[in-house]
Length: 263
Ligand SMILES: [Mn+2]
Image (cartoon, rainbow, N blue to C red; front, side, top):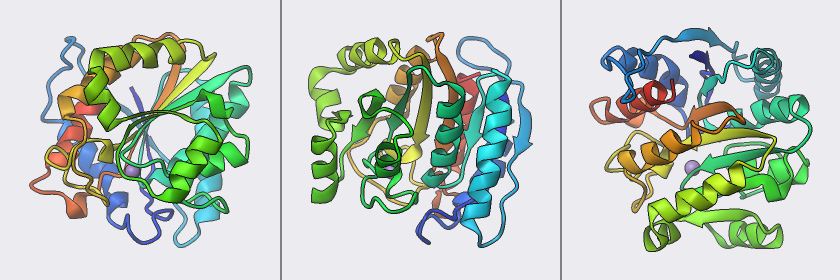
């Protein structure tokens, strides 16, 4: 599996400091996992984006250019962040390449719809919608459970599809997964973004914003094992793992597990 390391916390408004350490830490932990649960031996081809110190615009340009090149190879890469702002330039490249009807599934505790002026990790959704990077009806959020009034208003106004944690549990994970699959299958091309804070902090404490009441690791893997079967799936990212806030490497190992299961 092609892995693109993006060792940047520049879009994290200072609050994601430490997430730039994640790519190396997570890759190191993959050495403790022998094969995927489907019996696939994990083999990683590791590449990286050059991160320009204190210059997020230059870093984002580099992410965009790298993503364009890697996505063209059609090898279903995983982009390993980094804070969640790295998703924006990748998805821009994705939507340029896959013009007909691309869509995105975002696993996250937060809608990331705080501001609409720039692409930080707090306003990813606004940037995707307002800059028309992905059609708003082709964006699906999963695992949402902490949002403020602005964010609810933004989601309602734009009719963004989402499955909150509450809904996942009350409707049942199988039911929600079926709904998700039926929408995702309809996209010409699918991108999956995984913010590790979609997991309950009991499973993934090493992240910037610990939000109680999240998915278990097993439940996230259930969704990912299903999504992985879709023919239109083109790329993943895995973001917001923060080794400096982790406990005994628990979260980095969860990241490694996700990588191995996506092989
Ligand atoms: Mn988040």
